[in-house]
Amino acid sequence: MAAQFDNSYARLGDDYSSPVQPTPTREPRWMLFNDALADTIHWPAAWRCTDTTLEQLAGNGLLAGSEPISTVYAGHQFGSYNPQLGDGRAILLGEWLSETGQRLDIQLKGAGPTPFSRGGDGRSPVGPVVREFLVSEAMHALGVPTTRALAAVATGEPVYRTGMEPGAVLTRVASSHLRIGTVQYFAMTQGGEGLAALIDYVVDRHFAQPWALAEDAGGTATNKATVLLAEVGKKLAVLVAHWQSLGFIHGVLNTDNMLLCGETVDYGPCAFIDGHNPDRVFSAIDVQGRYAYRNQPGIVHWNLSVLAQCLLPLIHDEQEQAVAMAQQLIDAFPQQYADAYSGFMATKFGFDGLRPDDKALVDGFFDVLGSDHLDFTLAFRWLTELAQDSVDQSPIADLFTPSAALKDWLPQWQARRAGTSEEAIARMASHNPVVIPRNHHIARAIARADAEDYSVMAAYYSRWQHPHQWLAGDENLAAAPTSDEIVHKTFCGT
Ligand code: AMP
Ligand code: MG
Image (cartoon, rainbow, N blue to C red; front, side):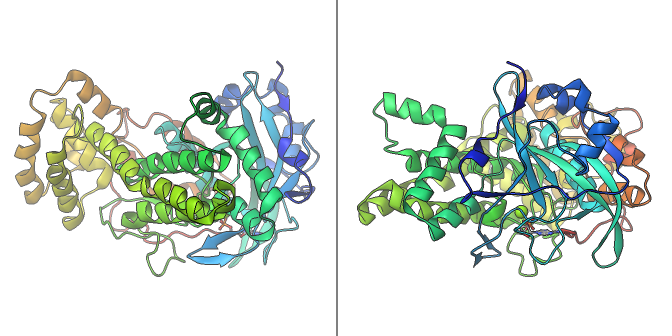
């Protein structure tokens, strides 16, 4: 089968989306094109770094087969319900069917106003495009489910935020952009058939297999709404455990930023922790610390309960029954999260599996990291080098100095890991990164891109494709930021 567009969401009808055209731009210029992703999704060679494609990805003309729409959704933003959001700065060109039948949304972010643009112009400055490209692609290389970045183009036109900034458009790829907020919108405005049609669509697109299995086995999933809730819960539990294991802070975990397919989306004020602090918040708008590092699992659980509430009328005709069934699925989340987190911790500490009495050891390590503000990423890589008996030969010894408390903690870990397998050590080395997209690097790539130099962005992108390897000359890239370099706040920049 030849790869092509096939736009099933547009066919759901105009309750779900509105046709929209990208707004032309004056003088587009390539920032970066992701050939590796293009290969994976069987993107045609003629649609890569050509002049025509540059124009199309900047909003001047359309790729063959695309039917651009903007989709409607709602969402809880910082806990308050907003009944209508929608793609205000994103335009869905269509769904790309790869040669293997994989269906992916191809979206332009920053290509001009849509019917859902609120108080904005639908444009994006260069900065957020650079951040999203770099961080989402690094997350993918780290093994975290995420939306991807196919291309970034500068528009050659200014956008006005706090001042004038150069504009850019990101081409984003996702299994879909359907979110908890999409379900919220249809639950609140339509209920009944309008909601049921959406749930049918989502389950058929993302969870057809569990649904079929459950039907065959006369399984516990009694209908598509319960399949959806159960499967989304499982995916999100693993996703947030993965974030925690890397010290990744999403920054805006509103329900409209939680994809039902379980991919990380919306790299606005996100950041990786440098010196550990479980209360760390980067987002300039998160004044209450709602989305602090330590709160992320609880917030995702809360977001799942919002999804459950929307699905109640489809779960069972009797409200009491529906609530009981939904509650059971929501209550499964903490254990699913704990299991996933234990799995990641076993890997990061070089164990074959985590035992119940390991909790004190793991918690003790994070307590030391937090109280001594040790670098999250380097601390785990230092342990990895110790486990491999390579710490003396590795540049890590110059980059990371264990505190007295960490040296006190160490013997317990050494005793515990005695006798663990070679595989466990190998897994440890392939899960504790050497290099991650640190905030000060991103800031540097953005500053250069603002001055129309995209070479730093390209270099970081390439390097972060292999995060678990030491490469010659990595000292600067692997090091924690100096006190001058620390980034204290991040901004969505929309
Ligand atoms: P976000 O912070 O990306 O989750 O966006 C929240 C809402 O604001 C979404 O409905 C966006 O579509 C909308 N939005 C964000 N930035 C812009 C912009 N530059 N122009 C129009 N709408 C925007
Ligand atoms: Mg969003």
